[in-house]
Amino acid sequence: MILKQIIVNHSASETRVAVVEKERVSEIYIERHSDRGLVGNIYKGKILRVLPGIQSSFVDVGEMRSAFLYVSDVLNDDFIAQSRKILAESSHELTSSELEHELEKKLKWKKTAIEGLLREGQTLMVQVAKDPLGNKGARLSMFITFPGRYLVLSPYFNHVGVSKKIEDEGERARLKATIASCKPENLAVIVRTAAQGTSADVLLREMHYLVEQWKIVQAKFTAVESPALLHRDIELTQRVVRENYSDEIGKIVVDDVQLHEKIGLLLAATSAEAQGKLELYSEPAPIFDVYGIEMDIDRALSKRVELPSGGYIIIDQAEALTCFDINTGRFVGQSNPADTVLKTNLEAVKAVVAQLRLRNIGGIIVVDFIDMKLAGDRETLCNAFIEELKSDRAKTNVLKISELGLVQMTRKRTNESLEHLLLDDCLHCAGRGKTKSVVTSAHDLLREMVRVYNQTGKKNLQVRVREDIRDWILEEEREWFQEIVDRWNLTVTFKQNEVTISGLTESAFQIHTV
Image (cartoon, rainbow, N blue to C red; front, top):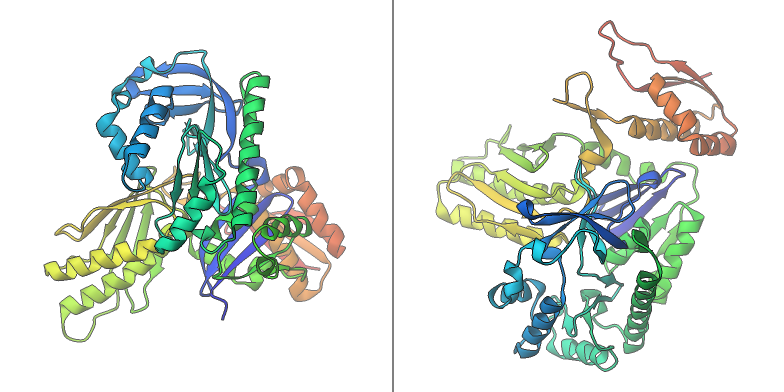
């Protein structure tokens, strides 16, 4: 049985990538081509306003909304000099969090107000650390990084680090010596976990590529006026493959020829074995239907998640906080109430972490486990939760479980959650509920047309659909719609959907064959 797969669905309007572990979707990434993410992009920006009250500044990077730069993300010569000194004096390799702690103790710059570091009209090189979220613009950082498959290049600093997940001391020494032997001055290189066992030639080839990327960015920064884009990160599919590929990946299936070729070039730099895992999907049935991913996406939008023994979880997402409420439901156990509660909570641990990854939930998170009176049970639960979070690549910080059974945690958020991406506030209940957006409904309808044709073989389709969804398809999704019609020689007739007395449609669309 293949333990892990990457499934890619590409259309004229959006790209969707699913990471499947043990036949269940663990992560889903969606990027609409009209609203491509900015994370990883590097810009020559211009300071618009410095705001001492919140120790941040607004920066014009040429996008629709101004981005913002916190004082903690500002880089200057003092910071670089002190960082190099601390790294040189350290008797062991420092992780990024350890380095930050040392800097906070020794570096007065950390206490410098932002108005002493930046000024209005100043130009600077910045990289997008977080996409715009809600009404907030993109978050920027002056700590530039160039991630590769095996290495991460960080300009300005001057050291070699090795991932702590590589535990073999001999391998750590080999990797560090390989990079240190030819690393240019004033550049830091972090060796990623994926580099374990990789030949020196492959590592050096990637390092030289990343260094060339940095030189190109430097040249552009000098040559162009601000605001300007200096470097665009690779597109979603390649990024997901780069970050997720490992020996555990059994296959990568792509339903688009061009994307298949791009991923093939990316894997070619890894190994011939990696290329052999890449497959082109060319069947008429939608690829996410075949792999059962559409159903997993629908389940990921539900407030209720069932647990194996009969318990369940209720998930409520607010703008800055997400709550998980654990309930025993119909699970009553055998005889010992404490055992019943502990078993339900341990099942919930796996489900909560799975939902965090699948829904891409970030920010402040509170998990309301069922109250446990025994301190030993609370410790068992807390340890199980921390252990399960090791499967999550996002950075998390978990506090100990309280006597009330509450676990408070944070999870790093770089882009929109699945709910915010796919759902809109319901216009008919003043935002108290959720309904699928016009874009999501339009995409569902286009996929349903293919599904109906594959199931019935009928080419004449009569579609009853809300007017706003029909208009979106004919205006914004015309290319995708025409692609479907031409490929299967369909005749599609649109009719306005019937409405109820209250003025609400019972469903967004209905398709009938003629």
